[in-house]
Image (cartoon, rainbow, N blue to C red):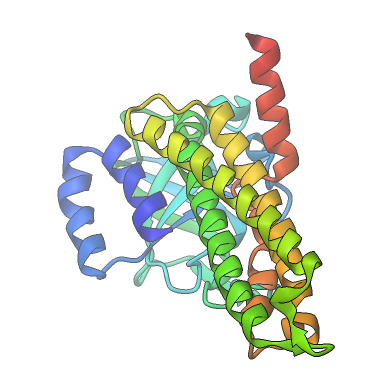
Length: 294
């Protein structure tokens, strides 16, 4: 979140003053970054956020609430998506840099208890007439926030794909080690044909996945990765991750669901990846619209 999602917003859209002021403090850890898009009534449908930023002289007054915010309990630099023109739909959204230390009207809600990803704090945030200078606007003018988020989401979705392939490889490594050691019915589990078929299928699918991911990364580094292909990577790799982790866990038997074994945590942690950064259903809509548009 801090390195690969928040900092690129500053690099791509920040003014020179914002970059010189904020980036060194983010690198040092003085500032911890988060981005506040999701609201209680607006998840994937970002155009319908209700948080507003009203201009008041040379300041904005921000009112609204956010939820499911990664780094929300720790972050003290939050990119807030807010409506600067409530009547303009997606074209009325702007991104505003909010430094929260000592900021009047800013409140953190609960650190949410969730399935998996226990090492990430995920929180509610409240903005009760929070006052920030107009110089905190990200970008040269209001109304660019939705476009900015759409431009940056492919990298976030590709990053989720990287997590998925990494977990696939880790699940296979742990499973191969386990079946070589565990015995049942007088032989190692690895010696059963069913085990060998499952591992062969999972390894093949994992290799195909990594090949596709590597191609997407190469295109991204060259500036050629499309939104549609990033959406393909996000949805397909996370769906595949879930299937492979489930099959590997099965080979662990009862030990697979024990917290002292790695499969239990991987099984929990992977579930959210089909939801955050845009649900996999939304990814399919993005892909289909791209096909039909062409």
